[in-house]
Length: 230
Image 1 (cartoon, helix red, strand yellow):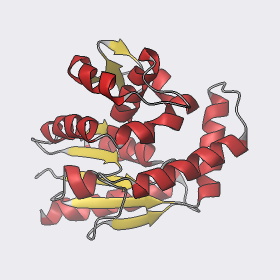
Image 2 (spheres, rainbow, N blue to C red; image 1 turned 30 degrees about the horizontal axis):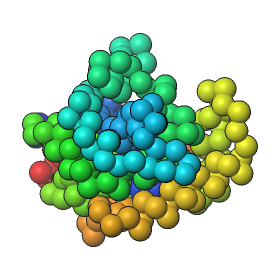
Image 3 (spheres, rainbow, N blue to C red; image 1 turned 120 degrees about the vertical axis):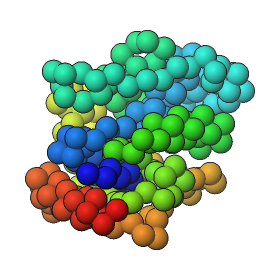
């Protein structure tokens, strides 16, 4: 059966990664979490002291870009691929609110985007891939056979993210999480390079009132139809 590329874009905390993982597993496709790649670069910048609340020293980060090796390694126990940076598993570290607070600033840097987009396009050379992010259907794979754009209300997304962070043991308030969601929406949608926007041929899934099972069923139906007509 012919394989396709499935591009899933949308706002933060809409469950893009969760659905993309489930969809890839159902189809037997490779899953790539591009957000994890930008989060890893952000973690590196934080660890090196290149970015904080009052300052972002871009030049040292750009000088180090070639030193940052990113890869995904499949964890059979968790049944998904985890993010490795320079050979170290950083999956847990990249999911903190601290990284979330700075990732939008890192992701607007053209040199960072150029490096990661090239890696992402190389990953999709053989197709049979589900990739989620902010600009997958508009920049990385503008000719993807299926494009999905996910959205939900800010309150719903903040509630989901808040619960997720609490489950991980984070000491955080709902108000902080909501502020982070709203800030990322603004930065992602207004950045100069590759802003978050729906591709003209993308299909919108608003999952504000949908369960994970319902959204997966919808996406799987769309994917199967596209595979049949590819």
